[in-house]
Image (cartoon, helix red, strand yellow):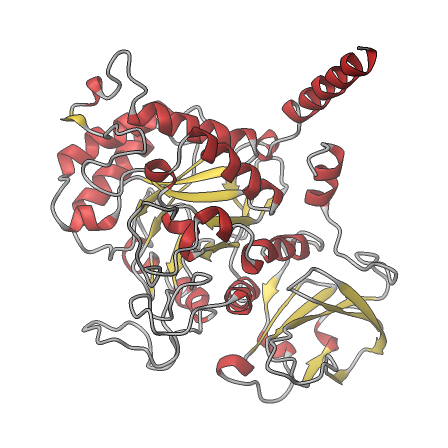
Length: 489
């Protein structure tokens, strides 16, 4: 009996600790950094967006599944989940409740005595909040706007309803668009965005564009646009697929790094990130189930290419997770006959490797980091041989997808001597290489060439700095320290 009481006390104590665990918004609301390239909290701490694509959470998951999903997201390092509030007009959830029981009259959105569509969305937002996760609210999917299922007046009423309902939730980021070009019914997006912002100016807002576009193309000067996103999309090199208005050069389809500079060509400069790259376990090009599927090393490449090019974060996606697939539900994007449930996707390697990216980026001075391809001395490679370099004042990093030999100019950062490490994006391991003089060096990961992808990041640090120790085998940062302190592992 005493043992039972002691166990209950320990559990209650653990629950109390977890209930008071520090959440991201304890640092204040999210704002734009002074150099207009990153996101940060009001108290000055950096916020590195690490998102998962959970588009159909509101429609396909029940309460128990919602709790399980956000718990898994937290443990895998994600601090953001992007969802479709309405994927159709109206939308239906797993409980059979629809989003618009009385049309666009939101005074009747919550019928008395019913666990409504919006009650369930409230639950989703709260569960994300308990796990320290922001919700990227795509208010309505772009196809519904393109089909004329909502007009500007309805969008204005909808925006007012959403803003009043969630303005006091600390974990909201508003996302206009939804895989759509901004010049398709722009009056609807403007009405929706300005309606929300007129009531809720505490939460940031962005726009999710169509594949191979950046939101800056249409909204660079919009008063409601706080930061930009691009969708590098799901096509492989050479997979043009006949777009009439193809916005990028041929055979650059996988070069998501180029969208950062493309976005910053618009003024004023604002933070930017890739919020829909190629998804893990989805056919290349999406629609042909006979195509090869994107793997963990592909999603890693997209993440490091984009972030080292200057992005303020990154969103991961998985074929099964983004659809929240499970037995009995319709499938798409090459899933027919080979259905993997969403909860199985949570165990896939790419999903669990994204945490090493946020660990790495938060281990060094954050706001002075810039992309700098001049670190690559000599000719750089193209396509999969492309090297991507980034640096602060006293550290630099180079992502090397194919583990090729490379020439690196160590003079780009401070210090007469530099300490060097290799970082493995697939498991977060680091290994000390040695010391180098302040000059151009030739370096290679010394990995045997096989069919396996062995991507690596070279880290060089001014020898007078102590960001890493020679004995370290893993990157350590504040996120990991917080997890240990809060007993959440």
